[in-house]
Image 1: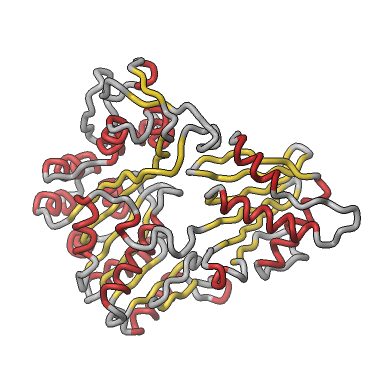
Image 2: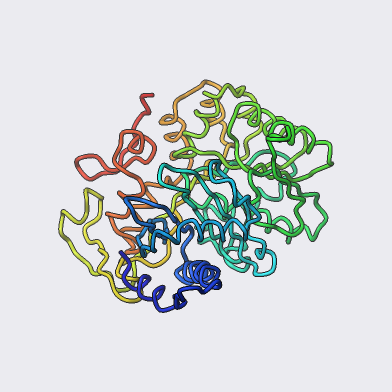
Length: 424
């Protein structure tokens, strides 16, 4: 529990009057303001075990903040639905919406409701203000990733994939890429997007949102979008074979396409697309680059140093910093996050041959490393070595499962980082 966040939130709670009709609106406003002050990315409100609890996701970790009286649950949910123009009388179906004041405040806020056994659960997604993480320079990408990415955004054709697990910052990066293109082109390039849903409004981009209920799904929208004379297309996410095929066909017909895709590493994204049935020649010819990233929490200045082997968790480092906790970091030991990217460039002949030969992810990554790729695990080890994060945080993000070992390449029993052939 982040005691400081709990205390700060409690200090801004409105007084509850017995018949105060303004209490619930004020409480909802206090919840939203408190979460924004704490830099939370998500607010979870749910009825569980006879209580109505609120949790905030701060720096990627869910933290319990407080419990509200159970009788407030339907009132708070109803108020949020009103703010998001949702149907207050429908409690038996999921609903999604955006707060009406997003355009005015510059703070994008989305609401998602979902029926559960004990009542509706609400998740509020709070996006960063328009001025934060606006451009690529704001993301903290290293030069060996930032410079090639910036050059690729000037291309007139090809696909750039942003991959990573949920919550790895793909959306933030792809919107920063769009803003970069808008600013650099000064409005002289036609930019369009098809998203599900539109999460952030980007001036200069003609953004559209799919509506499957009326037959406006991703494949249908993409086919129509190609007739809108686009030069740059942003596709929210590749989720099926038809969408993927349309994306790569567009990349070969004079369109720069930016899209996201769930994969544990850049090399694994290639093999996953091939497994979806995408023709290998489309991957080889259509892909410009795959940027895969993860986020780890940054250690607060209160962190201490240790050479204890147990604290190193097998990482190839001698001295590590470990979280301590103070008022400034809310007792967690961390403040903010660090991006760990890897960028697979497809211009290398050997990598292209490996794709056409249907090599596994391990072989593709091995060739990429030989060509200069610095993978996410090596960046994580460097971040620990530089005192930016802790071994425990690296293990939390990368995990220790077989799949993560194959895609992340953690050290073997000797503490040496190794490349492994993907057996799958």
